[in-house]
Image 1 (cartoon, rainbow, N blue to C red):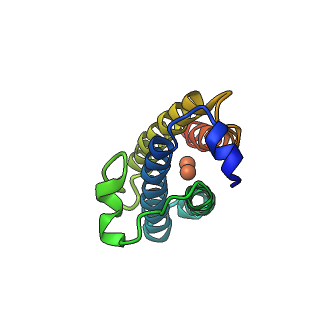
Image 2: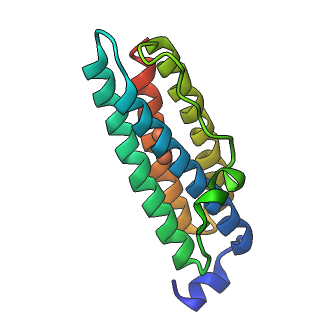
Length: 157
Ligand SMILES: [Fe+2]
Ligand SMILES: [Fe+2]
């Protein structure tokens, strides 16, 4: 990203990079948890649940990559050591339910994680609105997809 753009943006870029790095770590945790849950799910409706979980896992992996790209463009560095991912995230690892055919538990675990993600991107969007357009656009785009994820799983209730 251009020097001039960076200098004229109305936000503390260090703070934005730190916010994005936390979101980056959240995305890895969500991707892992959803992928795991998709692989482990059992019971009578497992194929449908698997499909939904795979779909959102794929989106979180994309978010991870979009956020990493933005951190690098802003001159930062995403968390490199996988051991630090949970420590640097906004929230602890979203644990899938123990029982692999507990669909209600799966829905609740997804909704809790998505609720957290919505809050995270809403905050970044609010902070950057009218001040740092490129980051704002990314936050708003990801926020829209997290809201879709929430709706998708709310509709399974
Ligand atoms: Fe995400
Ligand atoms: Fe999501």
